[in-house]
Image: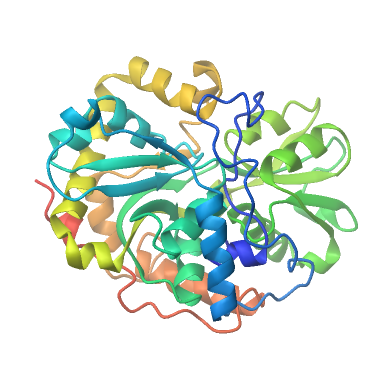
Amino acid sequence: MFRNVLRGLLGQGRRTYSSPGHSAASTTHAASAAGPHSVSAGRTRRGRALTVGAAALSVALVAAACGGGDSDEPAGGASGAPAGKKITLAFSAWPGWFPWQVAQEKGFFAKNGVNVELKYFDSYTDSLNALATGNVDANSQTLSDTLASVGGGAEETIVLTNDNSTGNDQIIAKPGINSIADLKGKTVAAEQGTVDHYLLLLALAKAGLTEKDVTFQPLLTDAAAAAFVAGQVDAVGVFAPFTTTALGLAGSKAIATSADFPGAIPDHLAVSKKLVTDNPQGVQGLVNTWFQTIDWIKANKTEAYEIMAKRAGVSVADYETYDKGTTIFTLDQNLEAFTPGSTDEHLDYQAKKISDFLVSTKLVDKAPSLDGLLDDTFVKAVK
């Protein structure tokens, strides 16, 4: 819902990121942390309307163009890249998406016959805007954010489930606050319109509260974590690796996590419908690369964790703690997720559930269409 082409129009974005302990300037591949966002205002009101006009799309296009990400040459450089039309694949900070960095460094894109320019975005919002406006061909993003982008007019489809968040999205509170109910009257920071804002709303609703029962402080995720540690807010909604930062406050603890809402935060590879039409072989190459990479990571955890921890800007020891909170989906789990069903494990059911929640909380005016949202063609074709 939330991280979408209009998330720029609504505020900032999910995993907007500069590595913990590193400024955007000092991070090896920092690119867009200091870059402009689509619109910095317009998020102070509740009940945001996800509507797209010509002016809105123009703003998003400017944001995507100016707030770009790091671009890596295909593995092996130009001479090692396979022939064929280049696909620009975007990703940002999240444990379930760092395997793309492994794929790049180990040459798996080329081995699967796909010519990829891998682009890392410090700002998750900018990656969403880039896909929605056609500045990249593919991006790893949440189901909720994909729904919001589609609702805003973007032509995107989900072709792969990277993972489910099973604990790495957290609401963390200072000492003395022991439950979500204790947040009533307190100040809570999160990146507005992002997945952890969504988690906060889910947790409040489960406790019989609404956002009106707290003072919501919209901050970028890294700034929210820093404000919490500095004692400026009472609780914070963050994702790994910023959970590590927030839990640095002595006595703090998670009072709600994505593990409390199974299936609520699935993460995916979303691609433009144009890419599916024009280059289905390339899409298949991306999906094949993903599963080859996951198999390699399982067999080479030490080296893989070093690569992913470096990209995350954290120690290997810290990165290892994220394992339990992100469940990487196997091929069988992908096939099951894409199968229509009536439980949270099924993407069509979860998409309808999220869509209804967005409408009920007035985060969107109208439920986005689910037609063409999910395409299981490519996971079914994996050998």
